[in-house]
Image 1 (cartoon, helix red, strand yellow):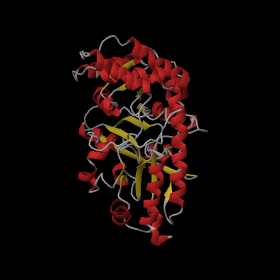
Image 2 (spheres, helix red, strand yellow; image 1 turned 135 degrees about the vertical axis):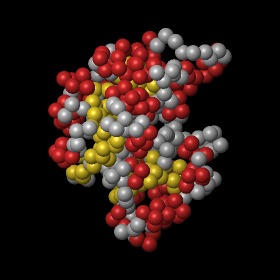
Image 3 (tube, one colour; image 1 turned 90 degrees about the vertical axis):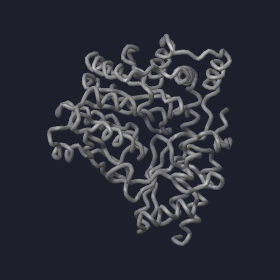
Image 4 (cartoon, helix red, strand yellow; image 1 turned 120 degrees about the horizontal axis):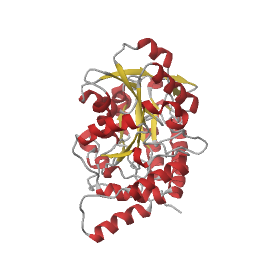
Length: 390
């Protein structure tokens, strides 16, 4: 029904992932594989491109107004896909999720305040926290049965009293972990007990591999809505990150008013094309997402099995997302050596683990959202680059 095996040439299209790869990694797009930036190599559902084509055909591209269809698409999606009833009045639109987080920092914290991250985690969090002159407070994740878990007891013992906010990545990037309801409930209780605002980035919450289930934070902790901010978007799930359109959903009216004041101070208004494409994605994308998630799980199986053949290399089991977290520490190699084998030997660009904070050393993050023939090619290249270990 959907051809995720189609090879689409994104070179020379102003693709960050492909057209910046040589400058960043020294890997030419002519013979390299781009597995770093978190967007996919697939076309979105046809309705998304049709919505954009209709806008182009109309030919007048003024400011976007009347958000009723847009918000109805969001609330409909959240209700039928996640069992989460969202008040349309709770939804604000920002220029992406990182921008939404930046507005949260300005609305709810002051310079010098501590913002807690469970590391290793999406590198843009620390960057935007630092850029806003807040302090990153790392709470290292711990391995439990090969997957990451939060150590809230250790975090409680490390608090200094200046912490004001927790940012949770759910599902987790880069670990591919789908947090269970009890873990989310425990974190919400922790935030209540220590008077912390909880910002839940759920941008990957539609990318759940079969056999796993994501729980939106408002459903895990319905009594903590007075300290909860939700970040969601169509951009990762439907491969429309270039629209830079995200949702900040705030159930509590008092928090919503504070956020709204900070948001208005940015002077921004919605991206017209992003709103149209997001509306089409949420209104029509159910079958496409179901097929995509099954395909991504298949990619994870192929990629993981291929890496298992390389001694000392281990991929963390994936429950969601399309971002594979691979541990090279078992090879005994220094980072320069295993990274060099991946980049110069296999000609693959992957994200460097230390960028994700404490716990990232010894790792690379690979984006596996590409046609399966390219996944098999990546496996072949990596096995050849580490052939002397086999």
